[in-house]
Image 1 (tube, rainbow, N blue to C red):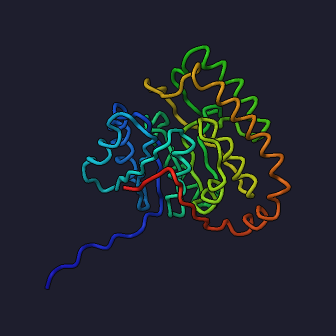
Image 2: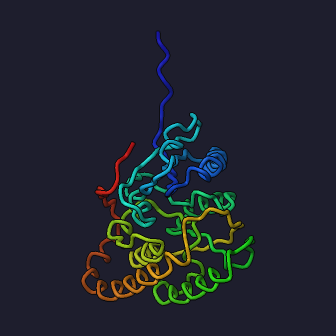
Image 3: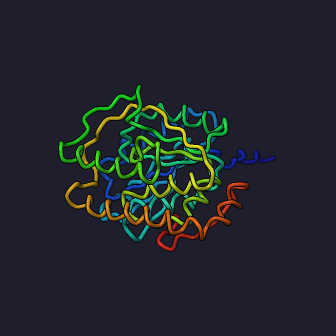
Length: 272
């Protein structure tokens, strides 16, 4: 009698990695993430979302060697980190999930803490480089540090009390974040603020954790090319957060009670 193949159980933890033109940095980042994910106490899968790359990012993922931790690919035809992360979040089904940057600048030992807090009932767990206990390496140029300080000040007007909205290490209750991602409109780098604001509006409690963070050369963010757009996006998020509140009050009340599994088909993406 033939031996049946081993059962494959659904993942309990899914990690989304947005990537635009990351063929150079992605192999090292994926290697580190797969190695760490294999040590976690629940079945974990990784989904790389290619954000309209023009290099060999897709080729890297398609040809990724077999590994105990499965690595999938989702392609977005439209560029934008917010678009890529939204597509990835809505493609997940696990009870716990989140995203981290392709460079793995945040030390992945924080995954143990994040997963433990999610399992204990925390809805949103994000890394913060501003907390006591965090260790950060080179924080970029003086211009980028100054821009980041202004950005944080403005962000506090939308998500008060959050010390670091832009650390690329955020994890969530799956049903909660899928509901929060569905109405997400911000395509660019400021999308994190809108996503956090949506989670809080749904009644989630946010927990920040200290992290070890090291700048990795090769970031696609440019102070000169992206700052103006990020500030415009933030202004739009601020306006929407106030004008939409009354109109969405009844729907948000319903979502707060059930964190409904809302599905969406991002028109910009194709799963492989």
